Every structure is written in C-alpha cells, then in structure tokens.
Image 1 (cartoon, chains in turn orange, purple):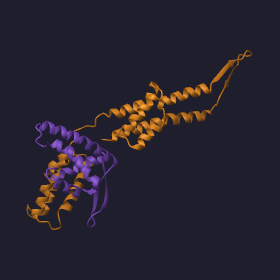
Image 2 (cartoon, rainbow over the protein chains, first blue to last red; image 1 turned 90 degrees about the horizontal axis):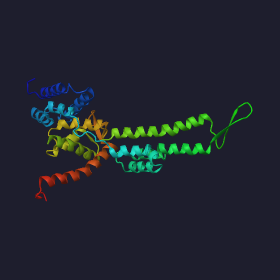
Image 3 (cartoon, helix red, strand yellow; image 1 turned 180 degrees about the horizontal axis):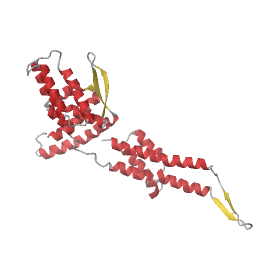
Length: 199
Length: 108
C-alpha cells in the first residue's frame, strides 16, 4: 500500500475528520461521521482509482472545515415573539382587565400568529372561552346564584345556614375547579413549548 | 459572505426538500451542481443535522442500492412554515439590498 493508495487516502481523510470532530459532543460527532461514510460509499464506485478518490475528497472539502461547520452556532438567535407573548397575556389575563374584550383580543392575536398550528390555536381559544378572567366572572355569577345565608338562632345561639340554588357536592366542586384551572395552564404550557420549538 | 451564504443555504435545503424527500448524497450533489451555493459538500451535513435538531426536517431510513440503507430527509410542518416565512422576507430583503447596492438601477 503506497501513500497515494485510494484506500489509504480515504482512511487518512476519515482519521483527520475523526480527530477534528473530537471536540464535538457525541450527539453531533457520530451522525456526522456516519453521514460522511455514507457519502463516500455513494460517491466512490467499487474499485475507484486514485483520481476518483481525490476528486471525491476534494469535493467534500477539508475534514477540519467540515468539523468546524458543525461547531457553528446559528447567527440569528430567535427573536422574542412579541405577538405571541401579547396573545398569551391577553388570553389568560386580559379577561381581568377588560371582561371578555381582553380575552377576545388574545384570541385575535392567537389567530393571526404564524408560529402556532391550527390545533394549538383551537385549544388556546376553547380552553376556556373567556380565559382565566372569564372563570373569575363565572365564579362570581355562580356565587351570586348559589348564595348561602346564615342566621343566628335566638335559643342556644346556634347558627343555621341555608343555601339557595344548586349546591354541588364538594368532590364535584374540587374536580370542576381542577379542570377549569389546570386546563388553561396545560394549554398555556403547550403554547409556550411550541414557541420554543419554532424557529 | 460565508455567514450570509450559510443563512440562505439552510432555506435552499428546505426548498429542495419541499419538492421531494432526498437522501444526503443526492441532496449534496444537487446543491453542489448549483455552482457557488456551497463551498464544500461536506459542510452541508452539519447544516442538515442542525435543521434536524431544530425539527425543520426529519429523517427516515429507506432501502438504497445493494444492502445499504439510505437516510432520507423530509420537510416537517415547522420546516414548511419556516420556509414560507423566509420566502416572504427574502423578497423584501433582496429588493432593499439591490436598492442600496445598485442605486442607479443597473440590475433593471
């Protein structure tokens, strides 16, 4: 085997690439080495002569350059998605500021965003209509309908409370509250995670 | 120029994958044939890996020639969205750059 033997040329190239890629995390290094091996297997026909091998290696470029390209951090960091941040604020807090209207602004911003998928938008709008502000208002309304009044008895000083309207069992109230509050929290988490995924 | 090329080449890869799924060597060879788009073929692979990390492309193994499987790259929904956004921004960007570089309108 001579220094210009085709097999030796490829082996040298792979050794240089492996050395140059040593500093890369394994999760980046291994796929890269595998890709270059696959590339050479496709580019070099069986029994390729020295000229063909040199041409294929020249086209690939210096191993050091390839490894350096794997270290590059994308120049443009994702900018703050202001529209989406505003959408989340209005969706979940807007209802407290302007009942219903604040939430509606959130829904409009949600609809025009290009970072969320349709499924995310539907979840954001439907869980729950009115947002947390809406839930607050719902709670007030329910409190008014199912009020509890207490009177102190004259004999023995006992206090008697009477509830009017629909009185739900305690477990149902707890489960309902959990669904009403955890639902929007889960959807908000999903929407935020989507933003972090998107470029 | 290198930074500019790198930023643009990413979207050229997405645009090629929008037409059809491709395996690495096929994609690299196609891009290499477009003179000036890539300086060396090997640097396309790290770029593909970054696109995969960003979930703009996904991969799958498919049968190739002989008993060797090929890793195919395909555009994801996120990749499609990113490409659409880049397309609209690119037009404005290109027009602005040309306006500055060629104020006398040599290109027109």
